[in-house]
Length: 250
Length: 250
DNA sequence: AAACATTTGTGCGTATGTATG
DNA sequence: TCATACATACGCACAAATGTT
Image (cartoon, rainbow over all chains, first blue to last red; front, side):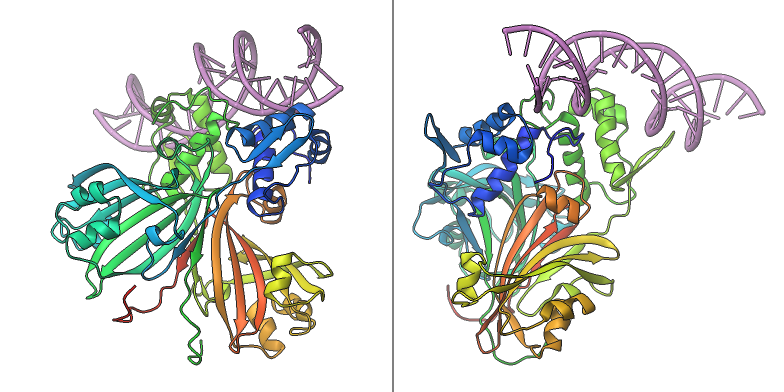
């Protein structure tokens, strides 16, 4: 590890050390229950003062990623890693096994001027879009923040059903469209905005995975455009590859 | 935008403002060629001093994301957004169209004790793994940093061919294995390590997309385990969904 | 051409926060 | 706890380039 001290990077040293330790934890190099090296060892390893290491560890302890026990050491705590499967017919609700997932509608609006890409994909031709803002939680932990756009002609009053049911899939079934598939997904990542850290109750500076997706009805009619931000320190996206179909050369 | 001043978050105000502006640029709200609001306007919007805004803009200018022209304004510069397609038979080399991609071997080793997951997936049974560390560039810009593990029995001297050819696909073809497919991909994100910022020549604190993938021969024999880190400010991962196959209910 | 407002660039001083010893 | 060094943020004045009137 090269020196982490004294860099005009806009990141304080304790922040960088916290991120490095977080990486080792979520990647499994430091397993759940494992003891972290002592503060003195970490201080030497990162080339900083012990106080600086203490601040980094305190930040991780504040988000319950590690637990410090006086006289004994600091240990990696239980931390649910949610794996979200992305495929043609997978939904958040069935992505994490049997655990409890719930969506909560934060806000909805009929947007007269949706983003151009939305308007084009949904073929709105100037008509307004139904926009819904929501937060998804797994086992009570806020996991993702989604923005959905629909054509209100296709799915009228969808926000009412979503607010009641807490699931896009169920809400769509309610209005008679159970059969839709994912047609495109693209994934990026960035640091969370201040608004997102508030909505998801995140520690400042958390990284989010941004998934942009388009779903369509079986007939091919575009149904929804969605942008979901997953907190990257707890969620991993798992790509569903089609089964190996023997032939067809690249 | 809420106040960005005075937060003990480990992130300086100019950093947060820079990230916010970067987000608006890469998400297209600020198009290429568009003029940013003046420093005074931004200062008022973020509730900080103009000098603080200047530091944020200077950071973006240092990575050539914006160009400032005295007396005229600051403008969004050309910035290649690389879209990397992830599918069953897609490789980095054919993911960005006709532009020039090249891989450079940084290091290789016969690793006696590879990570447990690698050893299991490749069915090494205690035998060493061939590990290769590489950097991929598109049009001269370092884009990703990959670590590959192979079974040396399946692909002997692969590192020699990779060093010469600059492509895993070509190197594998050289040793007679042209036909392999992606069997699993999972995607996460985090801030880059110091080592990665060095290898990819990144500004400090850059976010990376981490893709873990397993490839197998058509017969089903696991061929390689790979972990690729893409700089998230320039790369977007595009998931290749199988064509809509009419029936099969979820 | 000339005057003016706008915008970025430069310089310096001061107060506060962060990291070290 | 205290002292020291540096990065950060703010405040202010003015220079230089640009575009408009």
